[in-house]
Image (cartoon, rainbow, N blue to C red; front, side, top):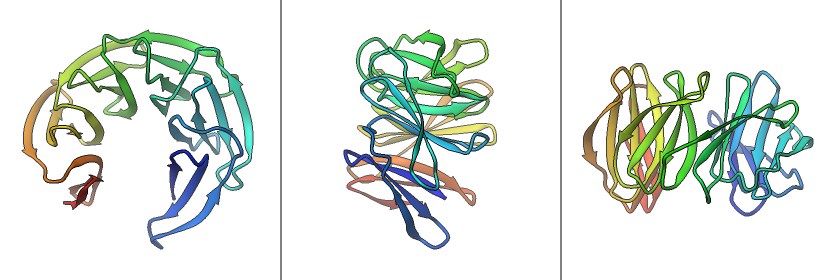
Length: 220
């Protein structure tokens, strides 16, 4: 199943890709405007908001079963679950990452990033990744050591990353450029400029990249 956060509605759609249909709509009844991530080992999905709250949500019923006030301000820049911790980012203010205990809501670590606008959080290739939206780069973080290990140049406005084997692919929504990153060297290679207005969502499936976005057809 795929869980899709619906912007400005505080709802989460549950989509079955095999049946190609939305099977249920979750309405947690709280302000959801940050990231959305799943924690399979905890049986929960998590979301955040502009007040710095973290919500643990039952993926079957939509009930909020955990609510934490982190006290760090907005957490709407992105959210991921990695090695038993939540990794969250603000959208505005100083660029940083917060590692959060999902059982207590306690901030475990803070990592300050040299970024103009840190936005979106991904995991892959044994690392945590953050887009430097205004800096045309992606930042690779070793979550175990809490250190930035690479800052790789890509296109203008990196919007999504996917991983497969020893490679990562980055699509940038402003200049529409697709890059491939060699995960062993952190070097990027420009592959193509994609058609459309703003290609910004991408998956790897059955040996191919699939890309879409605002004003962009589904590309293979």
